[in-house]
Structure formats: C-alpha cells, structure tokens
Image 1 (cartoon, rainbow, N blue to C red):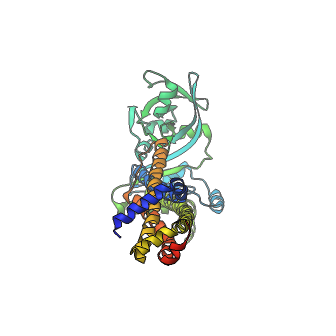
Image 2: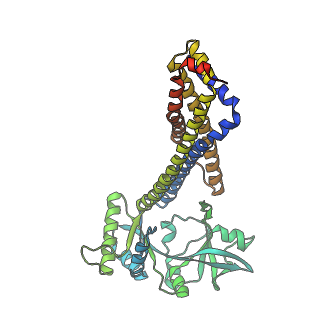
Image 3: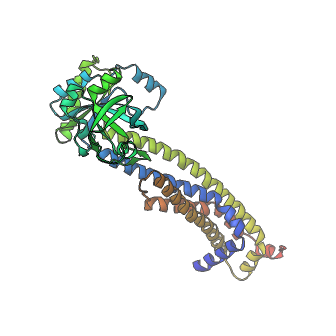
Length: 408
C-alpha cells in the first residue's frame, strides 16, 4: 500500500466519524496547547527580564538586608533578624570602595500623591541619592535630576514619573508645580523619561525625593538598599564587590568564616533566581501536560480498538484481496498518528493564541520558538503512534477468514 493511499484512507475514516474524532482529540489538544503556551510564555518572560535587567548594566550590584526573592519562611525569619542597613553604611561604601565608579542609596514605599484635588494611589515614593538616576538608568525628560545639594540640605524638591504628569498634574508645564506626598509639600524640578510597563505594571508611577528628606519624613528605621557601579571590566566588578563585602562585614562585625549578614546581588543573581522560578513552573506545567497527553493517548487507543472491531469485515476483505499484515498495520498506525497530529496542530494554534492574549494584556511582545512548535508536533504524533501500535497490531493479526465471517 502506498503511503499517500494510507493517508487518504485515514482521512476518510476520520471524516466519517467527525464528532467521535473531535472528542478523541481533546486530551491531545489540551496537552499540546499547554506545552506551547508554557514554553512560549517562559521564553518571552526570560527575554523580557533579561532585557530589563541588562538595562541596569552588568556592572551594577546591590547590597540590601534581605534577598530580592525569598523562597521559604525560614529564610524570611533569618533576614528579619538582621540589622538594617543605614545611611552610614552607604557613606562607608561611598568612601571605601575605590573600584566603584558610582555608589548610591535607595529607600522606597507606596503612598498617595495629591495635587489640586487630584490624587494617585500606590505611587512609589523613592528616597534617592543624587547618583541613583544614573544607577537606575533613568534619564530626565524635563527639568533636572536631584543634586548633591538637594541631598545635603534635605530640600523639598521632587522628580516625578510620567504617570504623575498625565494623571494628576493636568495640562501645562509641570516644572515648579507643588504636589503633596503623604501631606508633605514638594516642588517638582524634573520629570523622568517614560519607562513603560513590566508585566502590566506601570513603571512611571513614582516620585523621587532626596533620601535625607525622605528620612526626615518617615524616620530612619527603614533599611536602605545600596547600589554600586564598578569602574570597568569583569575583574573590576569582582574587585568592587569584594571591597564592598569587606566594608560591610567589618561594619556589621561578621566573624571570619560566617555567612554575610547582608545580601550582595548582581544582575546575574537576579537572572539566576528568575530562571530557577521559571524552570520550576515549566516542569510543573509540562508534567500536567504530559498527563493530558497520556489520557489523550489512552482515549485514542480505545477509539482505535473500537474502530478495529467496527471494521473487522473491511480488514478481512482487504486481506482477501492481497493486503499484507504490514499494510493493515501501516493503515491503522497512520490513522492514529494523523488523528493525534491534527490534535497537535489545533493545540499549537490554541497555545500560541492564549500566549499572544496574555502577552497582549501585559503589553509585551510574544516570543514563539520554532523548537516549541516542533516539540508539540513531535509529542502529539508520538502519542498517536505509541498508543496506536496495539490496535494496529491487533488489526494486522486478524485471520481474514474469521474477519470475513463477522457480521457488520
């Protein structure tokens, strides 16, 4: 039997039982759609996070009281026992890190901002040193950034993100306008360039004030985050980290051989943490998708067994006319594989569609890899072939005389 003829017969058989074929494909469709969706979203998120983090520069590191991502309650309580980082720690790093090109400090919290009766909620108020705009790669679109003089004299000046300009300041030049942050008045001296969104969350809903002014308002009991930028290459980066680690361990009286009583992290650290989370998520969903494929495969095998029973006389006629065992085996295997492949095509379309919808909601571009599409088709077709072997073998081994005697 020609391969093309076997495909034609398989399509005719599937078309003759359309509803049964569609219901049979549901498990395969769900499994393949899950695989495509998860791989696509993971690739998109990895690319997006890599781009965002690389924007801060590979030569930037941070020092904080606790890790950016906490995986267990044990770690959380361990971090809470640590002493907070104070402005004096930042000043020690600023003075002692000779391999650092820039050093800055940050404090932040969410609050309410008001201007002439208009207000914004969940606005991030940031206590900045003058260097933080450079360290966070925030360019100034209008006006100026905060200066060392603002920091030294604790001025009530502010630089704002564009959400503040668009939503509460109204039309006209924002420079010189007054807004209130937690009831405290600030004069706007600058507006940062638009940062866009991260997973649907606006990055322009912020107000930056001098870190000293921030502490006058909210107190000095919040732990700061220290930012550092190395002078040059990877070796300098490592030297800057080592200098900072020595300074911080000395100030916090960490005994030799003990762990750091603070967290020093780089962009690579953040990317490694993100990849661990995304890989765990991927493995879990792929496991669930595999279950769907197994269920779909069992359904395919069951339907193919029913098909063999229904077509016993047809098999007998084909064998009587000269069809060999391998011809019958090939016919039913192709039918099973084709059924699963169709489910795979539908699953791929659904998976890409759902991924596109999710990324559209979060305003990021989707990254569909050819590898994920090929993997989905391989899994679907492989499922059809694997679970179609037994029914096809059973059909191939039918005795033509017994088959011809069977009733329709």
